[in-house]
Amino acid sequence: MKITADGMRRIFLERFGGGPREVRVTRAPGRVNLIGEHTDYNEGYVLPVPIDRHVWVAAGRRGDRTVNLWADDLREQAEFQIDMTEYDGEHRWANYVIGVADVLLRKGYVLGGADMVIKGDVPQGAGLSSSAAIEMAAARAFTGLFGLEIDPVEMAYVGKSAENEFVGVQCGIMDQFVSALGRPDHALLIDCRTNEYDHIPLDPGFKVVVVNTMVKRELASSAYNERRTQCEEGVTLLRTSLPHVRALRDVSIEDFEKHQHGLPDVVLKRCRHVISENSRVLEAVEALRAKRLDRFGEFMYASHESLRDDYEVSSPELDALVEAARGIPGAVGARMTGAGFGGCTVNMVRKEDARGFTRTIRDRYRNFTGLEAEVYLV
Image (cartoon, rainbow, N blue to C red; front, top):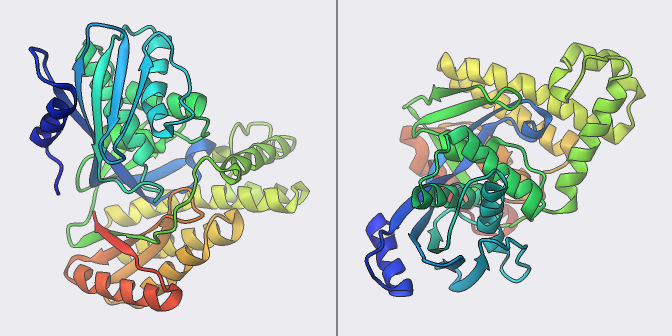
């Protein structure tokens, strides 16, 4: 059933009762990344798009310092004191809200007690950034309830800090940034060092099609943070020959080819992916602007191969979906998206072929793996 603002208010009143207080409803979208994977925490470039799936929050102020949270999809309740923002080991989902409150308080914003209902249709564990959507919807709820003045860029960084420092996932800024600033029918080119961004119109003749392997991955797993550490090691080693380098974003492909030989093999591969991926993002944007979707698709396939072979974050199911997309009429490109180890692929498909693509990719994936994929048209 489609989630609406009126529906969220009804759930709120059923759960927390009426009264004279105003009930505010906010929402924030999930995202899918067209290209630019694992580049954001290396101060590079990314090209995500918001999807038409959201996390919603209905919230009302309380007269005390308690924040009551009701996760309607999970049928679970959690609570915390606004003056005691501690990690909730029993209700892990609640920590995205508690973390946002914690960051806002540390930044000097004044908050009070609240009742909040949380509900969404962003698939969890699929690499579509349900966590960033919760953070941005919660930040918007706190902002509206307590009259805070926070611009979207700062709000994105509040969410990132909550995830890095409170939840313990060392993500970059991309997910929160596009959830806070994305526009329908546009990709968002983000420079993750300067925060400069540009809305890039999508070709109306094509659809972005997301295919879910239905294999969930844990973003906070050691493998994600391990790769971040390997990239940092690469920067340290490359800096001995290239002293200007602050992040892998500063290393050109030419310089990398000259100075890669002193790197341990695994660090070399991680760096090669990030450096080549940054170049692919910028070239892919030019292809998108020129409406060269065939060229854009080539960069998508190259990105997947790099993620599979150099960054080693793909999975048999993701590889099966990318291979399944090849040769389907109307499909020009496919790649894994998100942190990896499961989750989704993103595909660029001609609009008139999108329904046929959906049927065929499901059939091929079932034949390859025995699993049933879910498909979302962005």
